[in-house]
Amino acid sequence: MASKAERASDAVIIAAARAIISADYVIGLTGAGISVESGIPPFRGPGGLWTKYGEPPMNGYQIFLADPKKAWEDRIRRQNDELWGPLRVAEPNPGHRALAELEAMGVLRFLITQNVDDLHRQAGQSALAEIHGNWKLIRCIECGARFRAEDIRLETLPPPCPKCEGLLKSDTVAFGEPIPPDVLAQCVDHAARADLVIVAGTSATVYPAAGFALEVKQRGGILIEANLYESEITPVCDMSLRGPTGEVLPRLVAAVGELRRARLS
Image (tube, rainbow, N blue to C red; front, top):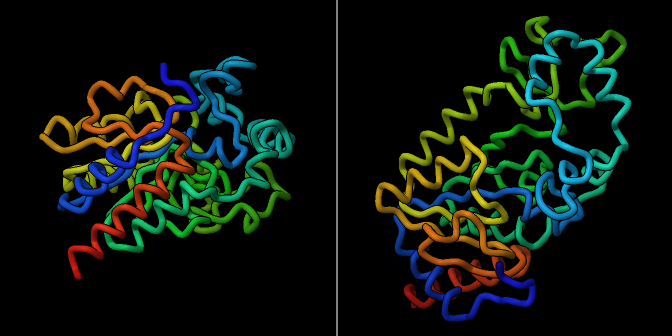
């Protein structure tokens, strides 16, 4: 296990940057580690909410379907608890902003995040799939339409879909709930094109998200990991950039920019 003091060398940062600018189609995969630096507690691992309180029921979606009214009442009651409270005040950190900058440079083509915190969007990421949903959105499980939470009236629970009168739930994907097909299709499409994946703040063990990175590797693509610690995916990565993502990713993006400018000069 790597220590917190371990820091990616300039040499490995430059090597990773060279691989990125040589790739044809770069995508990213992020997880809870990138948002811990914004004050959002993880679910798993030391200090994780599930480590402290136990995992939620594995049939959460079926529980919702059995009593949507109660599920909505629970959602409203929990708005300021240990999970949702930090989400309300969290802001993007340098790691989020670095990935958005890499997209703005035309280098990062697409980002898949397992996080529901909306921080990638707030940082300016637009080519984005939130594979586990977004806590600020409400989704109709019948027509698939999404709405901002503040635009949904709660006089009646569960509230009806403004578009089709169908059943609304939080956009966040519950245990037992299928990944929304529109999001899954985007991930499949971009992963099929990718020849390099930047894996940041995740051990890439939760499926289906992990499968997209490993699929690229199995086709002969490159995996670059940016993580504070060694992880389950480290042994198959071509390069591991050790350190906080809020430090490592800005260094990586700066190196990409410098190499691109050198090529053009």
